[in-house]
Length: 303
Image (cartoon, rainbow, N blue to C red; front, side, top):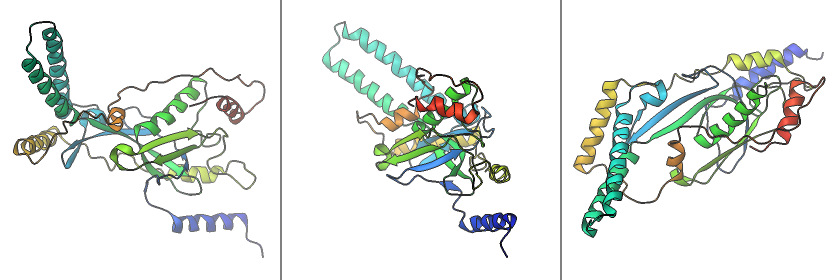
């Protein structure tokens, strides 16, 4: 007696449960991972991602209240103060260079500025974006914490298509992204993401049509992106910063006074999304489906 389609689906879901992988997705080095980003309403923007920030203070870390909760953050305020002081001292240095400033005085002021820059750089906010994703070949959502470069690629495609009235995250006719991590170490690791231009259902039947029951199941299993990010109180941030300052004073924590600029820090400190919109592809007309229109437009675009 042949198995019914209903029973086949039950067995498939049960097996998927046995095969379910961890809650968090980590990209393997030098290996492409194809995934779908699942829509949602998270954080202050109430969109598909949850943005949070981390201050790394020596060997300790503290969640940034400004980036994560749009609230006051003592560490960010101290960083702002240092930036202002650095700017003022650089203006003074520029003015003195046109005067009778001695070489020793100029060098002393430059060294003072260098120390202040190291102090400010140590307070930078490492920004991350959490998203629910479904990895190709898997049956259950996972959480992916994306660095700036991958998030920016996904966000750029999302915004450009939203301007044209299409939803790149549509579970019935959205698109996947191919993500890749190369290199190793804090400063040599690189991330990239590319949209795959052929829209398809998040979960499909054997004939390629959308399996709405399975799509609903996957969406119902999305994780709460906020549950693992504990926003500290102002007092807790103050205590963490005081401990950090004590570590600097005692010599247990050292500042990096080198001149080398790390690209990863520069990415993390970017506050705005800079987008370059390519020339649009010819707009499809007539009776084409949303998936066909989206595919036609993506085909001639480079992200």
